[in-house]
Image (cartoon, rainbow, N blue to C red; front, side):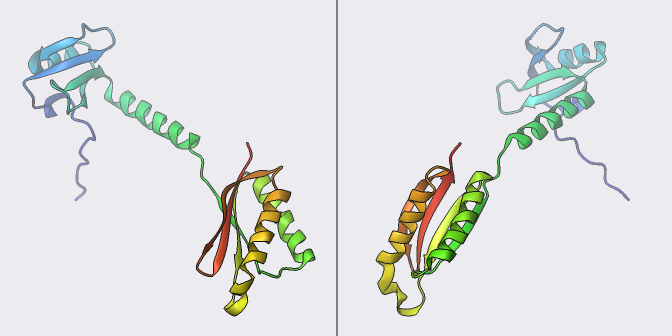
Length: 172
């Protein structure tokens, strides 16, 4: 047996407070007893919808409930479409990456920044290669300098465990 879904707002007879602040189109705004507010909404053939329950007295709007829900969903969808998702692309180097590999990875990094993604470039130190951490830092700073036309450094090279990490953000 399917359960009846409860509405997300209190409407009409589900409102159980002695008085409400009434807002809406074509009505005198103000504080009314609940019975009076229900009568006004019925006269206009609309619904009484509780908007803000936490206010004193609670705020209710006289509106067509289906239309009200439609407008709310439309607003939420619009807000969601305006949000931007931050994509972080990673590029990994070794402390002694040769020139050809470096240029190849730099082209990819440039492409990532051009498409608006953030770039996380890091040098991974295996075993005893940690003694070359200054080479890793020089490599990352060189990359940052060569890509400064497409992005700006958000985080300077920093050693975290066996990785030296640098973050870059695309220029607007």
